Image 1 (cartoon, helix red, strand yellow):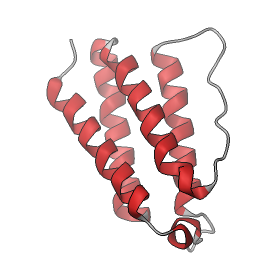
Image 2 (image 1 turned 120 degrees about the horizontal axis):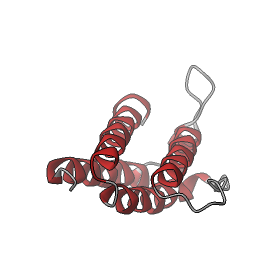
Image 3 (image 1 turned 120 degrees about the vertical axis):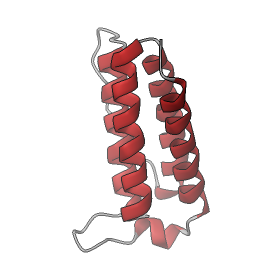
Image 4 (image 1 turned 45 degrees about the vertical axis):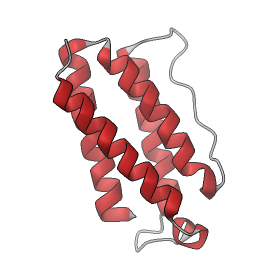
Length: 116
C-alpha cells in the first residue's frame, strides 16, 4: 500500500511544475542558463527520467522509450503525461513506488525552484 501523503505530494508538485511551465513565456523556456541548458531542455530530461523510472517499476519488456524533444511549448504537457504514468506505476508497487514518488517529487521541486 502506498503512503497517501507521498502520492498527494507528488501530484501537487507535478501540478505546480506543469502550471509554472505552462504559464512561462516561450523566450524564457528557451533561454539558456549559465550552464547552457534551457528550462525546456531540463524539463525534457526530467520527463525522460520519469519514463525510465516508470519502466523500472512496471517493466514492459521493451525498455524505456526515448521521448521526442518537443518544441518548448510542449514541455509542460509532456511532463504532465509521463508524470501521471509514473504515479500510476508507483501506486502499484507499494514501498518501492513510494521511494520513486518521493524522488520524483524532489526532482520536480528542484526544477521548479532552481531552474524555472
